Amino acid sequence: MRFTFRVDSSPIIGMGHLMRCLTLANGLKKCGFACSFVCRDFAGNGARRFIGDDFPLELMSIEGLELSEDWLGVPFEEDVKDTINIISKDPVDWLIIDHYEIDQRWEKEFRSKFPNIKVMAIDDLVRHHDCDLLLDQTYGRTADEYLPVVPENTQLCLGTEFALLRDDFRRLRGEPGKIENKKRHMLVTLGGGNQGKPLRVIGKALRELSKQHEFTATVITGDVPDLHLSDYKAIGKNIELISFSNNIAAEMNKADFVIGAGGGTSWERCCLGLPTVVLTIADNQIEIAKILNEKEAGISVATEQDDIADAVEKLLTDPALLSLMSKNSASLCDGAGVSRVINRILLRSLSFREAKADDARFVYEARYAGDASRFYRSKEVPTFDAHVSWLSKAFDNEDIILSCMSLCGVDVAHVRLDKNSPTSGEIGICLAEDWRGRGLGQAILESANQYFSGLGIFEIHAEVHKDNRASANIFERAGYEYLSTDSEGYMRYSWQSVI
Image (cartoon, rainbow, N blue to C red; front, side, top):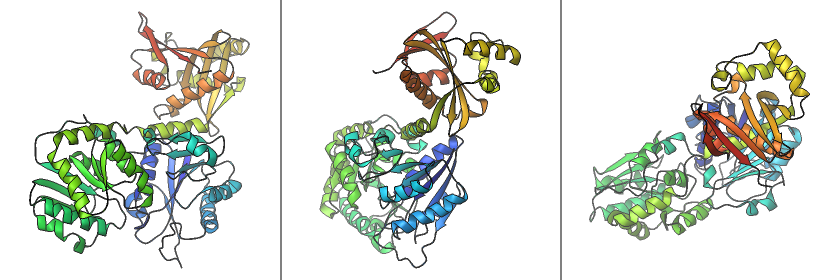
């Protein structure tokens, strides 16, 4: 599959939208899918800097435009026309949009030109969209909020379980609440926008606190001029000033807490169990700041010197509070959102069809190519002619359902179900060799569950050899319950449809 991202960045927009799109793009790339980006070439945008040579990038002209509070820079009709012209040259399967100035008007126009391209919208403001899949990673977001503003068949990915975090955060996730008795270290980071004023206020607060408390801090300054950083420099050697970090997860992991903004990076901090002194520096951050405060995962403050100082002092001096807030923070996000979102994209892209005699070669290779048979009860690989003979008999057997699974029109798996009653059966799934190890298994199994439920099969059984841990993980993530293991090492699983 091929994906294009429509996203912008600038000192006004910030870098958060671009960075979370890059996170998803990297996840899709690991699955073997191709991604590209379409961005407006605003002054100070981060597209070239952060995308680099990792993905193809088309920068749309800003000739005659002035950077303003209008994040799109042009009328939406012009922006969608520019995007259509770019994608017309090299069509894709999915367009993924992360932009506060793009809504259902833009999306309807795009879909009228490309009815076969699926559209995914990333949002956190509950706006009207015309899309196939919608992601809102705000904690506590519910379907009831979006049902009035999206088409009935839109797939919803809601809540922090779908938060787009890089692998680094999940890998570094440790034991929350474990607080060592040492000098406290904090991280100050407000994102990629123009944060000179709030950084200056934080600096004044920390300078006053340094007269009474010992601490160290790393401050990510971005492109903020030195005139806003004088108070940090006055504190001395305990303050490290860096303009940019290409490993923000490692910087967070060194900290006991963070002074940060209430944007999407909040879920990165939560994944690592980091309490936050939360500043709201944009309207779209109000809701997240409120959530962190209510869940006692952070302390929401105004951008005022005394308010910041009071909150920081609490975290410097109260280990019990720091420990509690660390545990609360970690409970809000586990860092596995990218794989869940990709699974939903795959589910939306997969389709079933009945296998035919012409599929004999595909089914044979899916079943036996490579070392697939090493986990079968019968390790013997039949000849192709023997397979064709078996397949012919299977087509005549009403208790055997043979299917092929396609991903955007490309066959990727063979699915077999042997009925053992009118409403139950035994499932087997074989991925084509080129598609193994690319993260499709769970989506294929969940799609198969839905497909067979539609045929009146409400209880499905499976067996997996105990050494085939990857397959066992897929069944368990897809909701199959482990039942038992037999003497030959085959584990029995069962799944029941919620009728």
